[in-house]
Image (cartoon, rainbow, N blue to C red; front, side):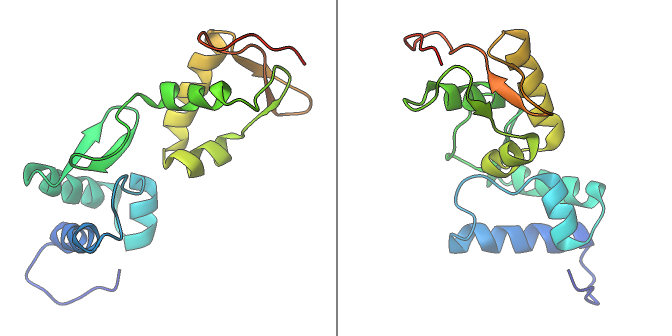
Length: 151
């Protein structure tokens, strides 16, 4: 974000920019992760947190633990682990299939690496995924609610 000579605080400039993106529909559901906002606006994490808090105070956005920030009244509010587990419920998923990488999951769900690692750890703890060939992970079993398929 180009520094402007303005009496308004930097966090207010960030919040105003996000407000405009929400009003225009450029952001319609999930907001980018805090890390992505830090990079995009070239500001500190605390500045981004203050900007998000200001928008939350206005009722424009809301925070969902483990899922991120959303435009108020939109988005999937389930915990990230549930949304990632849904990947295993797809008709094409079978035991033995490769599981997406942390990076792929971060991009797909707009979540931080920390949140994705937590979801993966929970899924590994439930025996749904585990170490596969090489450094990757694979599907070990399918979640309840799906007929068991074998590789």
